[in-house]
Length: 132
Image 1 (spheres, rainbow, N blue to C red):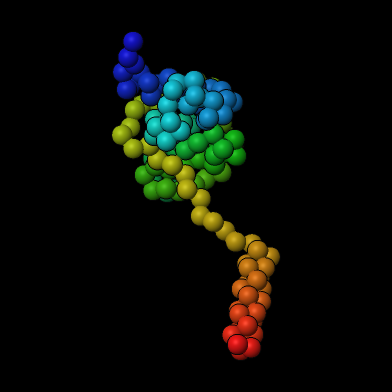
Image 2: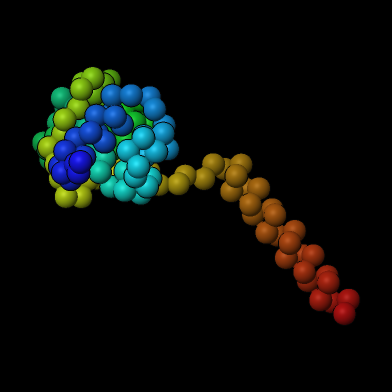
């Protein structure tokens, strides 16, 4: 028995959004690669709208949902939301689901530590080259 792609997307989204199963476990149960599974996951809509453009807000993944970080698909605004996604998600199929990509933020301590390691490495290399 073959499952149609749209039906498979519905099953994947139901299993992903309505359970706490790991992505590995869901992929294993459906005999999919993790990449294929992630490609089928659609953003979960919220009941809010973007304050900048008025478009719908959604959660790109379960981590964003658990943290209450909703994203506007139209303008990519990420906004902290108190509302949670409804328990059953049947999002409309979209060809390219949006994903929240949070920029890497370096803390002052991490940046200072990295800088110190770089300086010490440079000094050691310079000493090694000088003694040759």
